[in-house]
Length: 150
Image (cartoon, rainbow, N blue to C red; front, side, top):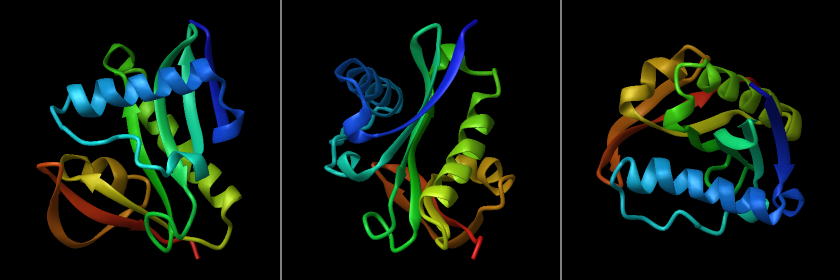
C-alpha cells in the first residue's frame, strides 16, 4: 500500500486532483448521505486542501478554510474518508494533520467547525468543545464546535 499526504492551495492542485477531490466529496456527502446541495460553494479557491492518496486514489480529504470566510475563526470542513479506506485510522490522522496545518497556516486563530452530531465524541477527542444548540444542515443534525488554542 502506497500512502502519501498532500497539502495544497487551490492553484497547486492538478486538474486530475481537483476532479478526484470533488468526486470524493460528491460520493460521500451528496450520494452517500443523500444530501442535495451545491458542494462547489466558491470557498475552495481560498482554502488549503489536505488529502491522502493510497495507491493513487483519494482516500481521505478535508479543506482548511481561512478565518473570515465561513467563520471569524479558521475552520476545517468537508472532512471525509472514502468507504473503501475506512478502518485504517485515516480519519484521526487527517484531523490531526488538519489541526496542525490550520494552526501553522493561520497562527493565532482558534478552529471552529460544524460537526455532524454523531461525530461529537470523535471531534471532542481532539479537544473540540461543543457550543450552542443542535441545528439542521442539509437535514442532518449538527453542532458548532471550537478548538481553543489562543
